[in-house]
Image (cartoon, rainbow, N blue to C red; front, side):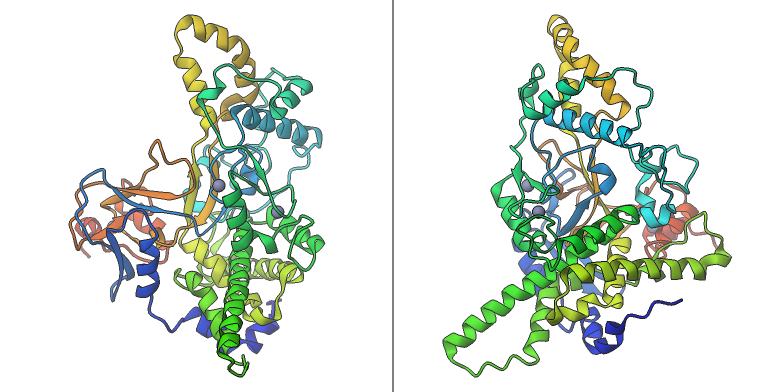
Length: 496
Ligand SMILES: [Zn+2]
Ligand SMILES: [Zn+2]
Ligand SMILES: [Zn+2]
């Protein structure tokens, strides 16, 4: 049965204002660009594509065009066993020893708990919010219907016969055992969550505090949590991990907006008191919520169950049922989240309409978060050592490399929303591309110029593999909700 969310109707006016904000975006982006490393850009709206990003200066080929920090991002649940990263900026933390030890430890744990025998089946579309870009995860697997623990890279290396003893693994994790030359990779020490949960870890006190104040205090399952119920929160998180971790990202958006709203309200009352005006909040409540929501309002959105592309394994006759199933899933998740962090003053955020649009925003602005693993650099360094030293080092490192197997240096992978990059339009002949340089070790999006970009020109990126043939490109771009009319496509379009 079609889920009915009572807040959809009780807050319908506010919901439509949240989805169609009255204020023009220019000012917001001007302020945002000032905070970025590169100030040579501006966001303009034009009739053709809505928003676009334009060069305000000339860029040479290879120039850094933009570094855009993550506004909302998560590491995929399935990737958490592979890499330990800062929950706020997504850089690797701890040490090479901790990264390796932890991975072996968690893999053994997963093996012991028999998670491989009890394969959990999910439709790929339900489990994986970022279908089209996740080639690495789907790669070489003919069975698209299953996403089980194995496939997510947790315990892939069944072939390895080399078992590292438990006490050696413990010693790696606790810092007792040092690997040769491991000091060539220096990672920031692990900082725990201020709320004392065992899920969020940070690279620094400043990341821990920023994350706490912006998102995590309402979503922390530790003793210091500001949620209504950490039990309810755990149920929500478990449901998201078992169905689609994009719900965790949507929860981050809602938590961010509530926390921002509360801050704005505090400031508002302080100002009021100073001027001794009568304290009638009335409609101001909602205008503060609108203001708190502003960063989210800038992302292009549609309802998730309407915009999600039909997975290959779903027959087109079952489309209606599939979309209904997605909507029901979102509703279930929303009810669990509501039990954990509901705030009456921010009620419209808990409508299915808003929740569906937030998830749809990630579906349509699906940008992968990828951070290379320093473990790979470490093993490459060992491999490059002069023969005698290499032989000595490998006596120690080889058994670990064997035990880790093919996936020894898995990247940190996740989904993120980058506020400026998401304004960039697509071209099949783009003038900029995402490219992480040696020094880019966190989750920020880094864009460099592929060719000279002149002042006034639009900066474009490719959302897909632009080398694909015309028809394939158009079919992939249809998932983003448009038909490409870039010069290359116009050129290749078949005359009708
Ligand atoms: Zn950090
Ligand atoms: Zn926490
Ligand atoms: Zn095109």
